[in-house]
Amino acid sequence: MAKKPHEISQGTVQLDLSPEALLQFQQELQTELQHILQWWIDRMPDQDAGGFFGLIDGYNQLHEQADKALILHTRLLWTFSEASRLHFQETYLAMADRAYAFLMQFFWDHGEGGFYWTLSRWGEVIEPKKQIYGQAFAIYALAAYYRVSGKKEALERAFEVYWLIEKYSQDKKDGGYWEAFTRDWGPMADMRLSEKDANSAKTMNTHLHILEAYATLYEVSGEQYVADSLQALVETFLNRIIGSDKSHMRLFFDPKWKVEVADISYGHDIEAAWLLGEAVALLPDPSLRKKVEEWAVLIARKTYQEGQDVDGGLVDHANASGWTKTHKDWWPQVEAMVGFHYAYELSQDEAFLHAMLRAWNFIKEKIKDPLSGEWLWGIDERGLPDRSKEIAGPWKTPYHNGRALMELLRRGRS
Image 1: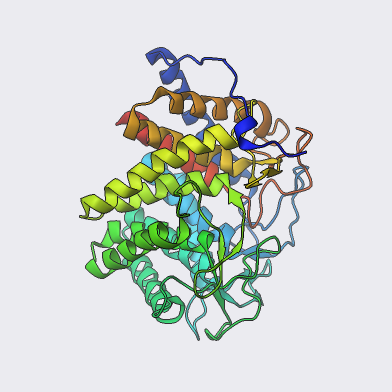
Image 2: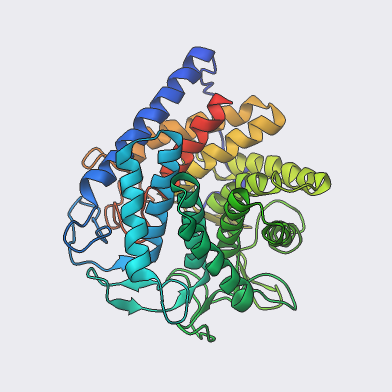
């Protein structure tokens, strides 16, 4: 039987918040980031076909002929661009160069514009659809790569995709962005991001990643029209996606923004808290910033009160009656760490630091894979390692854990 949020006990263990303990925490983050990045450098480059292999399964076995996903390659481009910016190493920039070269040569649609969704190992087009989630990740990655490499063509391509999204995906009448299109930017009957998602016209998830993409594009370019798009996205979150009680985001919508699925995703809630904060900090609107920051503290508190289990792990989903999926995937844990730290910065409430450190202890004990050195997909409802899903693949990349570790390292130095 699913637990109800108000029945969750956080326990009485108080973690060490001394300067020495927090310094050790920073050192652990640095070491773990280096381990993760080195794992991808050692295991994933495809020296024969270019780019990166498409899959290493949960038992650490490479599947050489697996298809190659746009999301994997854009997330690798973003991760190693940012890693190079944080800790310049030639190997990090070389990995970013490899991802960029494969994206431009094989994933880019030279006829219709935009990036294909899936290729074979050798670069043949398998799925040509233009999923807006994927186009957003391309902007995010290309802007980050431009910032560290200085290659103007990367920024030019990012703007090309921006204008494609604004032309085809933006809903000029009711606001927001449509989910997916055919190769030539026509409508699609099946717009789902993945098999587990609802076939909805608009989703929180796609809007969240357009937001992070536009924020980075604006950071590196300073173009006012990108800032205008970014502000419209922040307002869409406040007015459409965040529920009227401000306690959770809604996930799936029809074209008129009617909610189609009543569910709670704690990982997305807490990820949105700090990403919205990063975005609104770029904009010259103090009232908008205040609204976002107030919501970020509220949702961070609800996340650890309702969603963080006694072992420190964040459960995946709930509804009004309680938890509906009690497995614990890798990515909500690290998004929670950043979100809790951001809420602490805003509120100075040490409860958020305790929640962050509980999450880190859970990751070290349950999520870091002793067999591979990377992280497991997660643990199942019984608390056992979930090896049915990949260690590396279309949806398992160093973007979430690498980004969170880099973000926390930056914040710890400020």
